[in-house]
Image 1 (cartoon, rainbow, N blue to C red):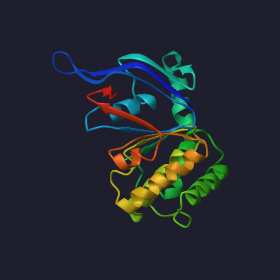
Image 2: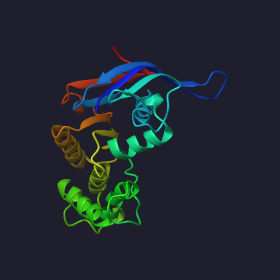
Image 3: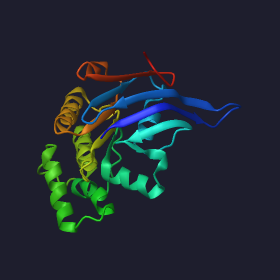
Length: 221
């Protein structure tokens, strides 16, 4: 999955002139890359990730996803792309506490209309893949922070996405769990999935070839 952004701006309404979160951001990410987005809090990292993930729209600029002009897509086409082509991993997990790990992973497939038996078999395989075999019936409240984030990654993989967007996925974890989550993302990238990860971890930026550094809504040169 490739990404091309050209002169993206995002201005949130408020005050006399609004608040500019992005100020002319341009870059490309090639298929199969692992890109890390770094910068101080409030610099526009999460806003950029939300636009890449089709969760938000820029005020101006151009954005192409795998060669397709995002702004020429209908609402239903964007919804399908979010569901089928992009996997999301969030800092605060966003799991449903009343549901088991297995059922949380099943949710994206349920929305995609996957057969019930296939859905549950695939969810179990994905939990095994991220190191949670035997934890399928546990709820998030019965899992550690690192285990919850692994459930989130398994859920992100449910519909076999070509792109994973991770917004501070290790922000709430201890160093050991953080390392395990990062290693899992590198392993998935090794399988050909494009990964874009927002992080404050400067050490991580040393492990990847592609760094996108932001400050005050712009890319640092």
